[in-house]
Image 1 (cartoon, helix red, strand yellow):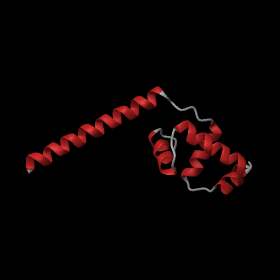
Image 2 (cartoon, rainbow, N blue to C red):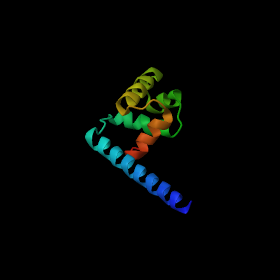
Image 3 (cartoon, rainbow, N blue to C red):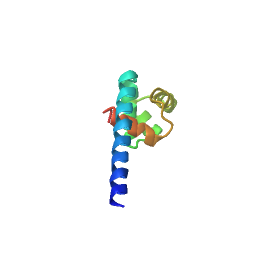
Image 4 (cartoon, rainbow, N blue to C red):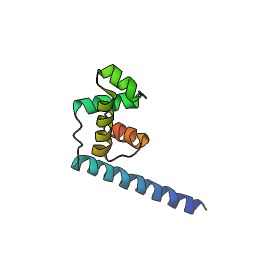
Length: 94
């Protein structure tokens, strides 16, 4: 069993290495061009601000915030807040 556990550790380590390399390659190949405003909104989303609070803070309409959010999700190819925050952390945006 010790040998099997060791093999699992090696497999896990290799998988993590591959995922990390793939993530770096994807990042290098497609550095997402978020606008300064989108980056600002992304940071506020990460701080758990609602659309209403973001619009208040940035002096823009809630509808504009929604448009920026949609664009951010599309550009980062994410579908959930968790995915978006993960993306932001990996790319040092938050």
